[in-house]
View: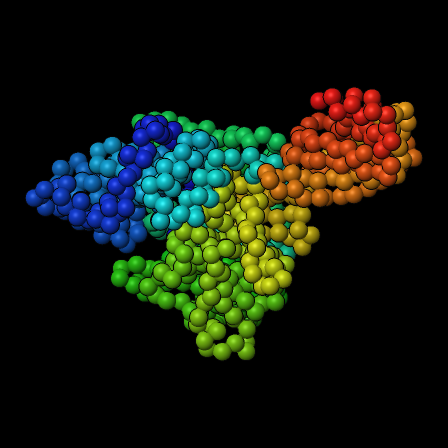
Amino acid sequence: MRNYAATGCLRYDMFNMSNIKRQVACLLVLAAMFQGAVLAQTGAKKPGPHFRNAEKEYNDQHYTNAIPLYHASLESGHANDSLAMLHLAACYWRIKRYDSATVFYRRYEKQFTPLYTTHQRLAELLAVQEQYDMAADTYHGLLNDVPLRNEKMLKERWQGFSDPTPFLRDSLDYQIRLLKLNTRQQDFSPQFFRGGLVFVSNRFSKKDDQRKSGWDGLPYANIFWVSDTVNLYAADAIAGVAVYQTNTSLKSNDGVADRTGIDNTIINFNRVSDDYSSDIYHLAKFGDDLNTKYNYGPLCFSANGNKVYFTRNSKKPFEGRYNLEICEAAYSRGAWTNIRVMPFVQPAYDFYHPALSKDGQTLFFCSNKPDGYGGSDVYYISVADNAGDIQRTTPINAGETVNTAGDELFPTIIDGELYYSSDGFAGLGGLDLFKTSLDAKGRWKKPKNLGYPLNTSFDDFGLILDQTKTKGYFTSNRLGSNDIFQFTHSPFVMELSGTVFNDADMHRLDSARILLSMIDGNREEQLDSIFTDRNGKYHFQAKPNRDYRLVAIKEGFLTEEISFPLVAGTRAITELKPLLLAPVNASPALVTKRQQVP
């Protein structure tokens, strides 16, 4: 399965940020004339056989096969060293060996010249390492020097990395637990099905399984099933914290280590039952009909469970590539039958990650076909029984509010809300989880980043929610490989308490109106309005890690207000300083005294 989720990091300190503009000034010209530049750099030498074979594997997206061939080509001294090094770095990027990718992108920029792609990917690698200041500086340099190319995405990434704190403030709302079904391989994209959970994994389904994908060298992906969610076991809770923390470490070796090389023993649990273990050679596949040759991937079901849409590699290659396609199947007499490729699929491009609306009328999916906004976009199409041929074969792009010049992937539709992942909006790095919905005019609202700890500087995607919308599952490679996590959501609030006094005689004031507003930059939003009780007391519930303003109003008194940040702490109740209201007819001395108080 194409793995469009990516992680990895290494410290990147090659560039003096003050020289970014000078180093990337030629990016547009280089991007347009790259092939010619490659030939010019290599003189009259001819490409060697290693390079030609590597290019064939690279173009067929067999990245693990291409890597040793590119290394051999670079060591042989044949032509096309610049293209070999660039594609070698891209291979490591694609298979999520990002530390190695960093080494060769840096080496390429030092030996040849910076490109838009190399600079942008190095910026993302900085973000994964949580070097947000440097990542922001790199994006700002790209934004200044290449303003006409992906300007919106560059600005989003720059702004997000410049100040990631808004994505951290609701961390106490979530409790994260790691499912014990995870293996050293990739486990991802859970979906509910008839009281159980299905998911995708390229684990070895038997100990002597030798089928491997040329994409990443791991076994082909198949669909597995836990028939009852009661049988899902999880590790101890990983509580969200107020301050962003990363509790993974990187093993260093020869300087070309990769994030997937982390010692992942944390996720290899002991057997918990005879047929449900971390080795999971005995965990059932989800029907032999949907687990055959090649990769099978993310899927979704109709509400009654009798229809499935799933991703797989096409059975016939297009120009050497087995592109991804979305298929439909129906459940009948204990088997999935009538499997067919959806009519909107075009063999030249990839179609993947289906998501069905609750009424079964609209299918959302992703594709890299060229009429989008760049990378992979979210599309939707009618699959209703009464839909005409045009409706069934003409997907509609979800638009520029949802899509970016980056990748939009893994959509899910939950009660009319669209959840999906993107690396083109402001976030914490890699793929972040977002949600959006339609407004009253049928337009998509600006997507909201779901924040830490659902999102990290790694890739986070494939979210589902149960019927209560307080519990769900998602995928992240924050521990080194794609793993499925369980989460619960319970909004964390703090109690605000205070008292209003008459400043003239310090008597408590009842029936004073108190307005609570949240301040976000230049925007202020009123949240609540209450009256003080007979003792002049008031109480509010408020989310921590935000800025607030309280305004006290009472007839016959001057209005008074206070502004304050509410920081998450151990105390459940925060007592605010008293609000002192001066009577309108207060003595000049009292008014003067109040005006002098800072």
